[in-house]
Length: 261
Image (cartoon, rainbow, N blue to C red; front, side):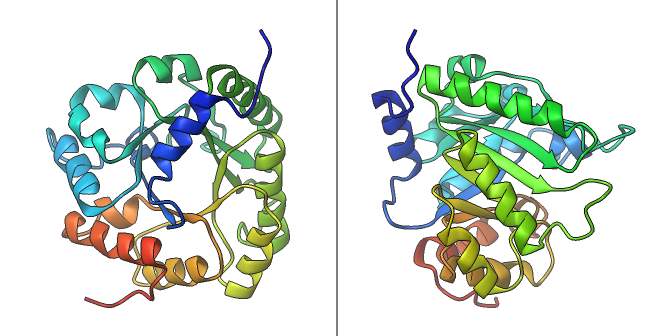
């Protein structure tokens, strides 16, 4: 079967993801439960996903089993990205990501897109790159958009936000077939502007935590030209996740400065 990158099905799914047209893309990863353990109390995942949809998030990232506990109605106004990668903090090498799902299974589950995590510089980098390339091929075959979460992260990486390393990470993601790439961007808006201008696909800024400096950083990278943000901990660790979703959505969709509460 011939592989065609720009299929009608892929365009439909990308349009659902980017339904706010020129506005930035606000993605909320909730895959942390596999890596770190529970992120919500029992029975609260559906409530959290509902708050994301109501508050203006464009997409949520979930593992396949989590979908059993989430109501499908939330995805009338929000895209579903099924995460295909996994590792845990208990592993001898937490940076060694493996595939636990594939594009075809994600489609059967109703996904609008899939995501894969790659750590450049990890001891298992070669296998992770091979996995990314294989998933990209499957996404072409099935017409599914691919979000690549690519980080300079390994025993020899001193600064995962170094501009030259970040530029390499996002270029690699685009070259191997990603439609979107998520990574940790430099703190300098000028460095961000130079990096994202050279990338042929939208670059999403990773939040990376829940500190007081996260929102101002996200506002800076949006004004510097980032295609959007992908923040999870900032939302699900907030005292009021619904309010935090609305604050981030305002920053991302309107590219406005972060305003303190």
